[in-house]
Length: 295
Image (cartoon, rainbow, N blue to C red):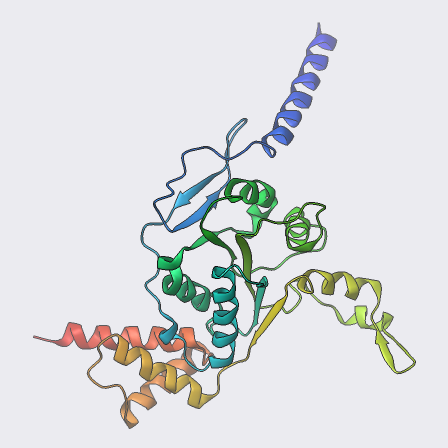
């Protein structure tokens, strides 16, 4: 009897594993609110559950004018997005570099700028990138133009989501839909951790640098993005410029002057960062204090 129970338990375990694998190949549920302009991808929970596009009815109200001190990057990605909307050649984009310098803000602002021209935004978390084949199949053939937005990407080699993104960018036997681009942000240039020991395999042959296999593997993912945009840390002057922009945008009484600059620099010193995010947080705090002090 005990042996029978053991075999039955093993059979149940195998059946559950099979159902779990089959779940990954199920299409998403057909309840997508296509009247929305932005969505988050949500994976299904439990056996037989299907992933879905969850509508975002209140996206961030950001505009391209809110991006300060990143003019070159803004012009490049704006041009690429306009080409995409026109049905012309356009590339997947990797925005990498210092934190808080406007990478994710730029993507959100582009969406707000062109949503009335058919641009749509789907946010996909890193752990859910394994569902990329289902997402692409779900939106293939629709009239809208979709940006799949992946924020703050960072992988360990061999992760399933890493492999899925690599195949979706340029590695699958099937061509991706014409109405989809992937815009990803990361603090890492190659999306993977890089170690000093890996540089020991680098060789110089006939004055050319040849990386070792481990480095080549890391480069291979970022290399599949056709457009790279790098973001550098802000200087003090750039930080103060962003502070003035947000103080004006948020309706602060004073947007310039020695007292404002001193307060902004002290705020950055406490935070250990002179980024655009820090500037926005300072302006929001100062404008809020002024409003609270009003009779």
